[in-house]
Length: 272
Image 1 (tube, rainbow, N blue to C red):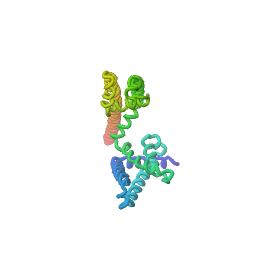
Image 2 (image 1 turned 180 degrees about the vertical axis):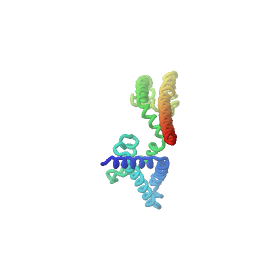
Image 3 (image 1 turned 90 degrees about the horizontal axis):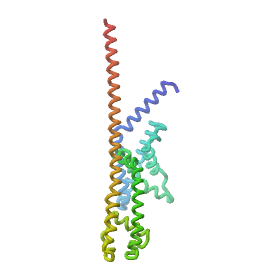
């Protein structure tokens, strides 16, 4: 391939990238995803399938064809660089599941078609930032999850020893204690469990109240704090990136102005 052909191919790919990744194209894909959400919901209704099942299937297939065309154009525009983006791989996997043949042995794939709606996460910037914040916060969340499991285990052993004979249904075994403490952590019916135990041991509240304070009001709030901190970190990084891009544009503009002034000076000198 000659140098001119290479430049032409590069220019064609850049033009294609600009079109398929433009705000207008993203809005069209977003609308198609929302329409697809409606059609997938309608497929769960026997009445709708009886009266307009063919139309719903046709719309679903048309939208799927649009998604396949979009990904094909992106692959053509980016080449192998397409696979460097985790979001592109995610979109390819979600659409690929819908394209896979559905038989009796793979009937679950038909239900998994609803995963196409998750493409909103890769299209809508605000949703992308939330997902990226979750991924960034995974190490911190793992540490908090380990701490929570340790607290659960310690309190479950204590509950089994102290309340196992009193309330065997809730604390008879270590497994039951873990499940009951998880229910208490969600604050679902915890007062009923505590009151039942306190009929025999009035001071059992000295166990339940500290557990709720530690597990629910402290540890779970740490999860929220880590995610919020990650989102703020990504937001600050985006601001810095925008500032760097703005500075680069400013430098390029100054260079262009200097070059223009030099050309004007040369023209004036030539006229003299």
